[in-house]
Structures are given as C-alpha cells and as structure tokens.
Image (cartoon, rainbow, N blue to C red; front, side, top):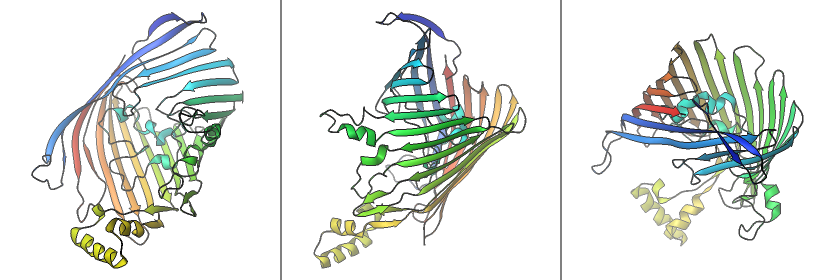
Length: 426
C-alpha cells in the first residue's frame, strides 16, 4: 500500500533494539446509486430497483525493522475484514541474507504466484466495489465456481511458521508449516505429523527473462478425506512469468490436484490451465487479458428436496416407498460420481489514461460451463468504469455493472448496478 504520508515512530523492544515504523490507515467506501435485476419479485421480496452502501475497508497498518534489518514486524487491524479474524501480524528474524524466519500471517496471501491473473488485473479497483468481484477468487457471474486460482497459486493466507531459504539470488525455497491450524497439542487434537502433512513447499527461480515457480500445497491432505466431497490430497501449481519483452508481462500457470478419496475410489480433481497478460501499447493506452480452462476429473453429486418440484418429489416418494426407505435415503442413493463440466473464463480489460489522474476502463468477460451430455451455460459481464486520482493513491471510482451467471430454470436474469467508490489512504 502506497501511503501519502508516513509517520515515523520510535519504540524500544525488551531486548533494547530501536525500530522506526511506518504507520498508515485506509478508508474505502462504496455506494450503489441504484441496483437490481430482472428477476420477478414476490410481494415480500426486495423491490426490483434499490440502492445500498458499504464501508468496505477501515484499516490501520504498520511495519518496521531495526537498523541492521535482522528483526522486523508487520501489523494490521481491520474491523471490516470479511474473515472472522480482524487482527493480523507477522514477526520475522533474518540473521543472514540467505535465511528468514517468520511467524504469523497475511490474509492477502504470502508466496502468491498470480501476476496479472489475480489482484493485479483490476488493481485497486478490486477494493472499490465498482468492479464485479474479481475472478481470481470467484465472481458473481461465475456459472460453476470457476476462478483463476484453479490454475494460479493465490498464496498462503493463514497463520504459520514460514521459512525463506535463499542460498543464491536466483534460487529460493519457501516453506509454510501450519502449526496454528494443525498444532501438536491435545487441544487441537492433531499430532505433529499433521503439521508436515499439511505444509506448503515452493521452489522459486528468478532468471533474467522471468520467474519460474513450483508450489506444492499439501494443506488439504487430511481434511474430510473420507466424505463424499472430501478435499483433494494436495495440489501442484507450476507457474511461469515472462518479463523479458518490453511493455509485456505474461503469466502462465497449471494447477494439478492429486487424487482425493471418495468412498473406496480415488478421484482426480479437474486440471486448471491459465494465461494472463498485460501489454502497454504506449504510456496512455494498454490492455490486460486473462483466460482459464478447467477440465477433467469427477465430483460427487448430491441431491436435496430443493432440487425438485413438488410433482417430482411426490413421484420420488413413491419410488422410495417401493424400496422401503424414506425420501432422504433415496435422495442420498441418487448421488454419485459424475464428470466435471468443462469450464472457461475469458476477461479483457482495455484502458486509456486521458490524463495523469483520469483513466477509463472497459472490463468485459464471459464464463462458460459445458457439462458432458448437457446444455452449456454462459455467464457474462460488462463493466466500464473510471478512476480519478493516482494509480496507487487516493481515488474516486464510478462505473456501470451488467452481469449474469446464466440460466435459472428457463430464464436468464440480468443484474445491474451503478456504483461509486472512494479509496483514501494516509
């Protein structure tokens, strides 16, 4: 976060080291001047057109280190944070240039390998409320939960013991040991082995032409592994970022999950392949784009009464009665392994800087799901917006949102909004 002003404060630690710390605050607010959708409304439902407001960020943040750079810390207090945890922090120790030990965490994700496929696609507009929720971690126009992080590693967002090992400048080994979640004490009910079975290991190579990284996230290894929707047995992410071509940034990644156990079967997760790019045609005009393909594997499909009409439920109850079981058990027996649908994300974001403090954007994209043997579902969004202010500083945003996540029954409702947002940091 780039601050307008930095307040230097000096404090003494118990060991007697003197620190200089930078402190800052951020306040973001969003108002939807009007919003709604084309759904038919029941008498007791919200009106077809309404408005809303949200104070998306109220944040205090600080960081500092001692004079020789061997100890440091980072702190954030954010009562409006979406997570149940509102206070975050990291303390670190770097006795030599080749080794750094950290304890704590940052919900933004540490060791992320996303480039322009992630937060950097919209940058600060992500937090303004003026763009649709970013497809890095899921969006309202996604038709099957597809997201760019199916292919790109979004970083570790919890609390842990983290080790950065860098024997030479071009090569690094990053290790996350999640003691906070999988502790060895009786209160957690986990043995020490669970910490290492849920660790994350990343090999990070930086060359003149770009960055290559291989990340193995083992964290889902032991979670709900015997349940129908049990977690995967770890996931590999292979990332390549090209920076050697002038005015072009290119990010490519593949996400491959290891098999998960469903009953007595080992089932593969879908493979995610993603590509993102930013090309600056000149100082004023440029374009960003990203695409994801998600395919292969199977998932466990379950059913509930909400999936059927009253007439269908009546027929199912008859079938269940013939078998001598109740309806819930019959619905459970209907569940089973099915092929994952083929999914695509495509976003394009051209932009033009009219002046140093006024930029126009046009965010356009589609999401598609094509189940095997079924009808395809198409979602889309059209989201032009403006930013008045500094690229990384205080800004006013305004835009228009139009989006849909495809069919609901025999209809395709269209959502719309006219949002404005303010972001100020100091």
